[in-house]
Length: 110
Image (cartoon, rainbow, N blue to C red; front, side, top):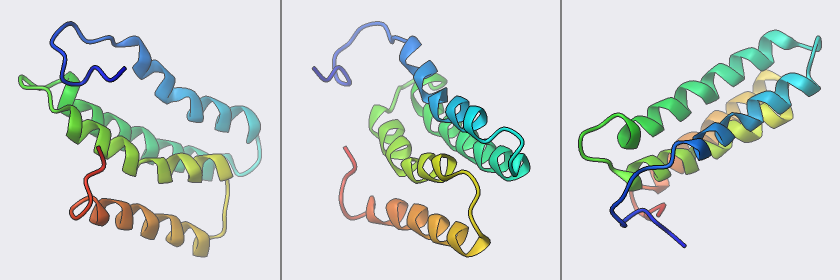
C-alpha cells in the first residue's frame, strides 16, 4: 500500500536499504579498480542524499520529488553494479541518467 499521501510519522529505516548497492559493490569489487568503484559509489551516494532531502530535511515533505530523483538514480545503481567500465560506457550511463531526468519533465515518474 502506498503511504505517500497518508499523514503520519515517517519511517526512516527503509532508507538504510538504499545503501545496499554500495555495500554489494564494495564486497564484490575489492582490490579491483577500487578507485573507480569508490568514485561511482560517491556519485550514487550524493545523488541519493540529494533526492532524500526533499522529504527528510524539508518543512513540507515532497514525496514525489524524492521518488522521481531516486528513480532517475537507478542508472547510478546500474553503474555501481557493473563496477568498472571503460570511459566510453561511463558516458553512456551519464547520458541515460540525463535522459531519465529529461523524460521526467514530460512523463511523471510517480
